[in-house]
Amino acid sequence: MDDWNIDRRSFLAATAAALTAWPPHAAAAQSVTTPPHDSSFDPWIEVRADHLLHNASEVARFADGRPILAVIKNNAYGLGLLPVARTLAQSKAVRGLAVVKLHEALTLREAGVTAPILMMGPFDTRDVADMHTRDIMPMVYTPIGDVLARAAQGAGRPITVHVKIDTGLGRVGVPHREAADLVRGLASQQGVTIGGIMMTFTEDAPFDQEQLRRFEALAADLTRAGVKIGARHAASSYTLFQHDNALLDMVRPGMVLYGIYPEARFRAMKRLELRPALAFRTRVLYVKKLAAGDSAGYDRAYIAKRDTWIATLPVGHADGWPRVAAKGAKVRIGTRQYPVIASVSASHTIVEIGADRTVQVGNIATLFDWEDGSRPEDVAAACGASVYDLTMHLGGHLSRHTV
Ligand SMILES: *Cc1c(COP(=O)(O)O)cnc(C)c1O
Image 1: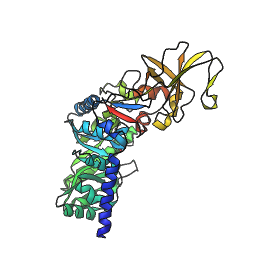
Image 2: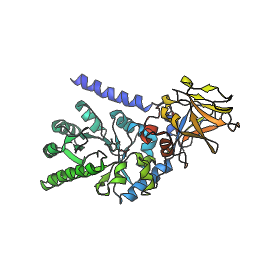
Image 3: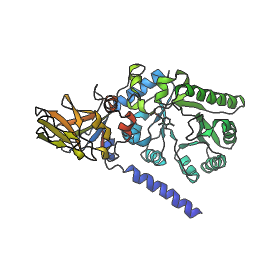
Image 4: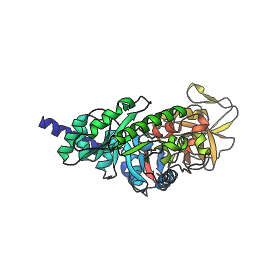
């Protein structure tokens, strides 16, 4: 049993060490000064630290100074876990960081990030002691009070958890009707502190309000019974635009911190002035002229109506550039926008240049960035994608530069 424990611990340490070294460009991603490759045609991501900090301040301003639990799950929505964590941790508005994979929480700690971390994803109860040693707070919703109490005792200090309440999303979380008993049970354990109770909205606006009533009734019951429930939190990015009465004690956004409006209608509301914190760029690989009637793409998805120049970009759906980009997205090269044509394949995208050869091999092509017309929201709207699909699928292999 002891041996097994040691193995498990060394496994966790090895996993964290291996992950810290991945992706291979992690070192470049952490550098603040590395400019985009001058020689590589491979697509890359630029991350604007100033925009991340601006967006965090904007959210704090809008939320009347409520602290932010910054959601940086899934490689910080594609921007890169460590540079984003290090930047956001500098913001006075940010109280902690939230992830949904244990390996991300471990990577943050191995890299020396000291901010509070809430791990909202799955974990094995055998890992609780290791998480606690590293100050990684678990999100819990099952009766594991004895496991938590043992971890607290083992470390000689209390363990803090946040309890997830299911008020209608049906995903994870203790059903709201059973939640009072569970929270009371957890809170009664020696060395266990409830740092917060939390929920997620279905984003069905009228039903959201019913969910909020359930959540607030539970919080009131527990408080009346003398149970310390910590911070109540529910607000994702959507909530900031939709439900002013759901900001509670702490807000828990992801997408808006990256400067992206989750839905087009939210941008028009002018509640938050968000600045996209990432750019996705590549270089023109090849330029050629098609004669009228020539085709491009698998299945001859594009047929030239007249003689035209086209350019091939070395980026495709394997990098996270969605296939639907071929349904209306435009790519900026120089100061002009060029439509994506044919189909997006694993590693190639083709754009139509027109009658004049206005682009050259090696020119930088911007798939999206922070300029009006090229924002992720603009690209998403042009081709019917979701902004979540544009960032969250960006390949872990892409090099990332903080600018
Ligand atoms: C992803 C996530 C968020 C943040 O969502 P956004 O729409 O990006 O703001 C908040 N809470 C939980 C539990 C999440 O999984």
